[in-house]
Image (cartoon, rainbow, N blue to C red; front, top):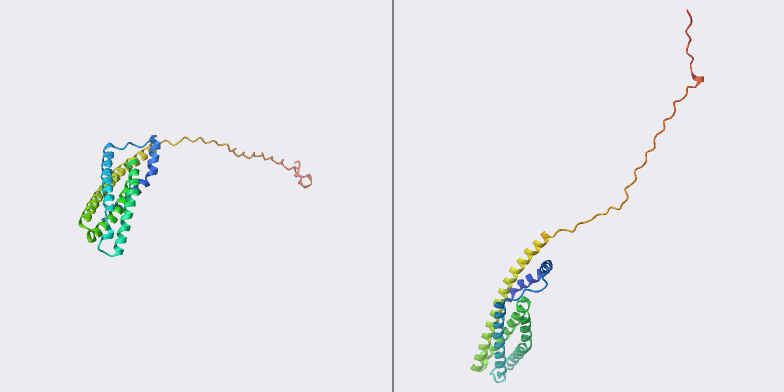
Length: 232
């Protein structure tokens, strides 16, 4: 059963929090990456050495195959020969290039998963060739190829386990970075703002004093004379 789908969320998780990682590194002024642990590098070197040995052995056994002498129809022979050619191209070109990428970035989930996915594809095609060799080829040819298939399967499982371990370590690291980012944001003091109010206040309207009108003088024409008292 393929295990590649189980590791896809780990890659997405690492990419999703890449901006948070950059912010924390900027806050802590840590521009360089953390050194890779010695144990991790040692494990990787051992896995790659086993894989390269399995690849060389597989290439040698594939070159010894005499598919044209198999007792089967021409269609089966052509299909098997096409599979063998594809395997040889991968083992001689694609696989060494990916191995170099993994060596340059020992704890890169992207590079490690790329190697695992390539091994997964190689294993499927190689298994088809082994099954055909067991059905139509000589016994010694089948036995050699079956041993190569077992070696490739061990490498595939080993790198699958390494992806799982790296994913767990990355998840712990991302959790630490999230916490550090939250603490940095909480401790950061907002910059002081100086507000300059250059708007001129509106002028108050000047109230004019109301002038009182002088009292009206009585009109003599309309004034009624008061009666004079008569002497007794």
